[in-house]
Length: 445
Image 1: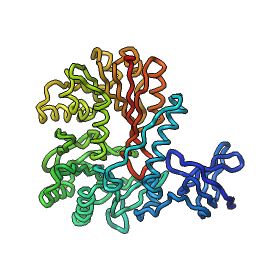
Image 2: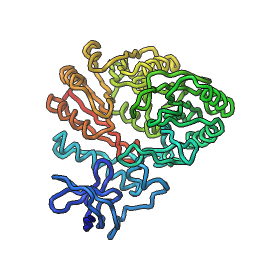
Image 3: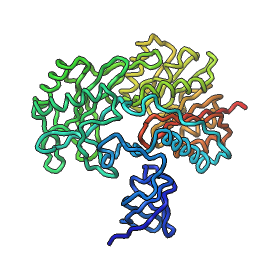
Image 4: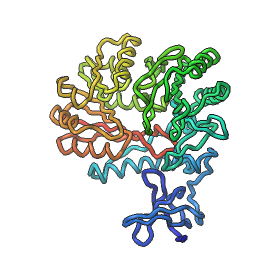
């Protein structure tokens, strides 16, 4: 039975749903925006909340825009493409501000306005798409909203131009070579996912086929053809994943043609990027973020610097000429190998890298004057925060992709004598609800 009602939307949820209230319940409405009066059909009611389908917009928001993407209503990739870009930035600033107040318990926090991305569209250097069968042929898509169902797409507006060009070419070649997508029900077919990593400064790309069976003739022949016909494709790599679940990458990488990594230039330094290594997906905005991090570190030249969760070593290598010594710690061994390669490429000799968990290694590395923290979305392990609270580095620069876990960790550090000196959000992921934030903390005051 339909339960249709009018609701005034007050805010957006962390996943981009409009939030209003009805009969004491928070109501989540896909596609609705703040300050809108809508008609919605309540299809799910729980004790404290309800979910509703948007029926009609009676009073639209002045910030509502027509999404340029034809897949927006079905695809779950871009949650706020229907929101004017200036309003997206304001929303992300407010999201960080709210986390600082509510979770970090900072009284009257000063959050600088979110730094806009140089490219609100066409910014993403990483394409990762599941393979599906569509109308009898192989296709690629993105996951539908709140689902693992795949929406086939011919293009994606947030992918950079090189990646998109190669995606279309690769898709045509796969049809030509009769590559079959893996079917989880029948366990037939080969290709599970397509991964393309591109570098805008060197106009180069890596293509990775995530496959259910290794070393098949059709994949090897396709790899050779792509490498020969498209100069931008510097390497084609196979990743074996025979698991029967939704984990994307397996552990084994095999280079089928060309190179196993590509180079990207960030702030004048050359960085090697391999399939398994983390690298910021918006490189132009990443440069702005790194500049701010190094500026806030206030390096004088005699510091011992720790780059925790260091990835391919970008921050430690960019800071090397400003410090006495830098140490990077990273759990992913492939990223550490890339970091060491990057140090050699840039003739940097005062940086060393360690492979392992930060919470294990940080106990053994001594005192640091300055620390860069750039943990995964879940934030820092308690053991890392405990060591930092005792170490009390003069400057601690925390970079986070989740305001909630950032605020939780800040609360711990503030209680133990650190002071927040600056909070700066960056829009690393335009058209989505995600926001990157840098916070500067000091202990020497």
